[in-house]
Length: 331
Image (cartoon, rainbow, N blue to C red):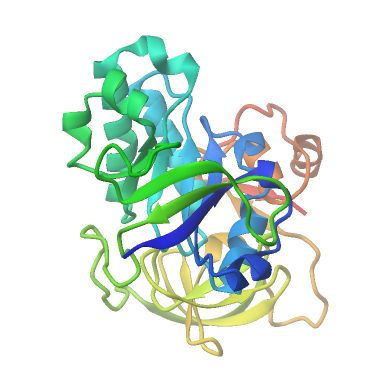
């Protein structure tokens, strides 16, 4: 296999993905996030890019740009990346982009451990981990022998006729031109067929256990919309997408997943608000249940509001103190 692939981020502006696909570019790596969790560090074109790319038919992977200074920070970056991409179908790998000058003083042992910590967490979540770097980093800042056979490599190696090392993706230029994208774009060749092969860590498809029959309606609250999946979990194909504000009936529940009969699939109830079926008056109030790792700033970002608004709506005395299970009114 040898197919064109582009990688993009906010720096590429608003992309016309239909034009990209029609130009025979059918694969893309999209920046999801950078650093440790912060609403401002989700790439501000990520949702637009992955939504429109997939609608156009482009198969997508993602990459996270690292600033980690320790294994603990790498693990936090992995959790941030997973939270950012959890509501999207990822066909290609989840790549760890390590190349920042602020990390070069850490030494090979620490930097290699940082890569392993991030990639192993990604793998444990059921995705394909990948390391993105250039030959200089691979040879001089990392223990390449510990990584090159452990993870797929995405090698940034410009100005050469062939990549210096075996790799699954070769980024051969930063000055490409693709219809639908203004200015230069990074160009790559992808050699590995990820579409027809499943990752070794993918959980087998099984019927959800502990399913409870129920009957109530919910309203989609996720601003980017909500995917309906064939199964209750993250490793299943997407059937369709529900727009923010869509109301659907739930007939079965397992954990935080609800079955939508009219779509024939499951949705994550974390991104919905329960709607009373006994009244014809729609409630404008929307609530969110706090989960481990949540902050008010993250919740405010998710629901396009402000921390001050959340504090006011919920009469919160200490904006730095929220707890798991707490119901937060967001609208």
